[in-house]
Image 1 (cartoon, one colour):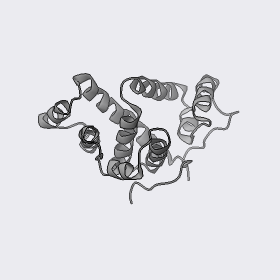
Image 2: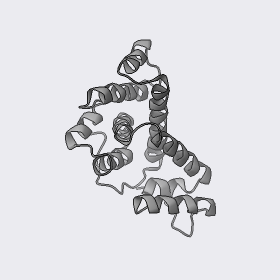
Image 3: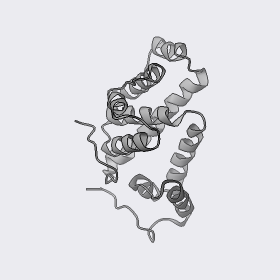
Length: 179
């Protein structure tokens, strides 16, 4: 059960409504996470802004792989369910790929390096070794992309925290991160 009530259209702050309308146009509906974040127009704008910016630099399948790995590390059922669904439907990830992502890996060699690194960043709260950073660079990621992988982990970690605290009702086919 959610610890904070999801606002209906009449309770949603006016500043959040245009952002939710844009999401509804893009996705066909507004996921519960964004309905919840709409209670804080600044929070909603920040999450959407960083997510939108990173979508222009890291490709969709990699972002979904990272989101799945980070949700698993952080025990976030909501984000795990959402990103497994979005990863399959929008990014074309196969069930075997999603299973590998849940274990901090990928079936694609280059993506595996990034997903493994992202999982270590989440597990160790950023305290990674020089060798771990060097492995990502050796796999062909630029310094900028390494930074953007860390930013993706931070964005996913932020939404994981929100969902874990609030216990946002899952509105995607449910998966359990603790399984």
